[in-house]
Length: 356
Image (tube, rainbow, N blue to C red; front, top):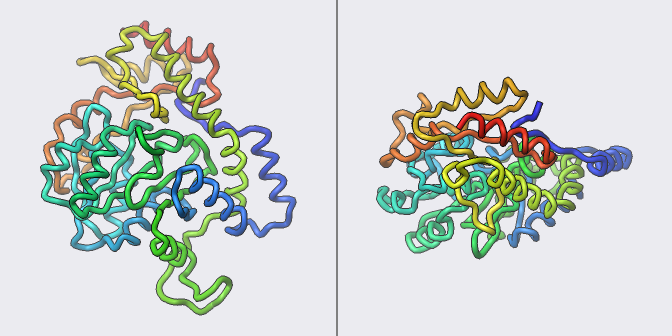
């Protein structure tokens, strides 16, 4: 079976975890987590990073640290993983659905038509960064908080900066299908020292000092583990290789599949694909492609359904969502693991071509 995506764990990764387990560490968050935070924040050009259990918690903590909650309106793109909007609701704020543009990122033109929100969550979906820099500029000019949900985009970038460095805060995710993984895990990045200390305190029971059982105020246990950090640090050493592998897989699909100009969203030199979107033509059905390829032991997936199609969000404030609601019906995700062989890509491509 050629899976649509799978984690790629090397002998070096296993050795890193084994070395840590044999070191007598307490497994929970300590010096390796600090090292991970420092290395990723340095790579992305941020001043601070805070590791947490997953990306949903990361978005929630970013919202809370920025003082967002009941009565505040937060703009989110209509095509994104459900965690983005769920974190807004968890924080007590009100989501506002905004349509996407041809990059599947939030449309700046439609954002400007929304009654000014208190915050925007920009999602560089599948590594495409759209008009992210323009949205950042608009947020600065209008006093709107900007949180970048870069769960899909470590290793991708904008023309002037890397994903993970946009806006007031950024988040990353380390679930098994991300470019580096610890099974679960997330990271919040910021340049603001006060926000950093707020997040660190909040995720560690808000202790007066480390190991103290006196507390400065309310706090929760959103700590990471050094066991996870040992795995991520090993993968970070080959991040550049993983980025080039993702770009190479995308280029080979474009080369080997017919009608490629119409089938793939454009990818700029500074962007790295996470999942590879394959666009169906009008009248082609996602189920037909999925079922036909599955018979050949090839797994593909439908793209995210628009949030507006989810029953629990039908009453959420929104702009016109015409583009996202139409384009979502035409997107499938191709196999894109970094261990795909040339033969794998040839087999997927030939089966796609036979369905044209």
